[in-house]
Length: 115
Length: 113
Image: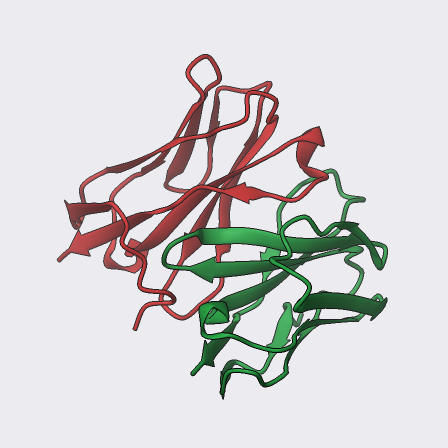
């Protein structure tokens, strides 16, 4: 059974470039989360979706960040334009809200370095 | 290499000893708690969870204790093994887990052979 799949695993880009991170949640899961992990702030929630609808995007740093979930099996997190302070590991996670548990299943993360 | 190079509190134990990792959570309204383990270069992995109507829950070699009075959570690992070396996070949630998890800052566990 495939877990949450994220791509790319590593991305190195220059300041000002557009970055798109991708996520495929576990099949059958109806909630999807984007987290960012940094040395200074630890794991912080950026946005989450229930049934493809954004529920809470209060963690999205600013207008440079956007996330979409066009269908139940795919989501993107876009940064445009990217800045060095966006360097972090970005995790996607999914779960089902129908099982009565709150466990999130995480992908392996996308490590972003903005030069 | 590490996932993010976090400057975390570190607990160093000898192989075979028991480990206790502590966590203070922030929201008195939280009613669901999870412990996650994160190995270098990987995403967080579920270990054990507990709801606020319980004060103790046991799994395989792990026990979670919840003290709602002082908003404290602990993870006990019995007979710690080198494979237990990782960063451990507690996470809290409301509405019995139907919202997004809020993560603590983490503790690094180092198991000495």
